[in-house]
Length: 219
Image 1 (spheres, rainbow, N blue to C red):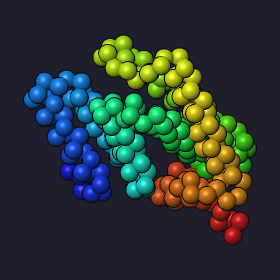
Image 2 (cartoon, rainbow, N blue to C red):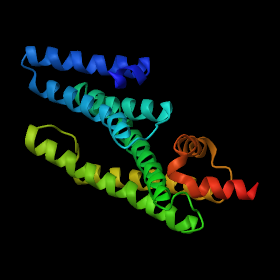
Image 3 (cartoon, rainbow, N blue to C red):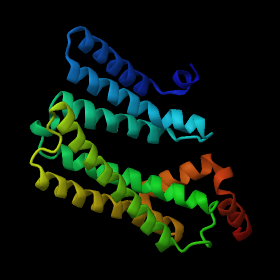
């Protein structure tokens, strides 16, 4: 109940749509559609549930992004075949996911140092962020292969060419995320993504205590 109360209207509408589609698909014996709908719903619920479990506060833009991303990638992409209808759909989603996971990796690594940007150079934290994005991208390719093999889907499309293209886009997205983190730690303007990092850190200051303390000393 708390999850529903704390969620925005947009996310509630998407979750209700996915649940309704899954139930209808089960009634019509559309097993593939039902599986895709339930998988999308479960994945979109995962970030707020994990945040509650770990006592994290997630900015609304982050929650909207993750929910819409899973909706666009799994539900629209597979159930409504957007990957075939729009040639750029897969490329755009891989790029966005790489940026998102890269930024998440940055926040996690920075949290391990309690926000002490002097404990590790910005270049090292940025490099780890890039590695996180590439690792998640590689795991996703394994997931696509498993889905194709197990359920007869066509997530890999052209096979090796599709996989390598996705990994290249993942690398570019991870590079954007790592550079954002680097500029953020260096005190330079990191743009919209940098403001997102700052918003998350501000909402979870207890995890970045040393960053906050050093900011006070600097003032």
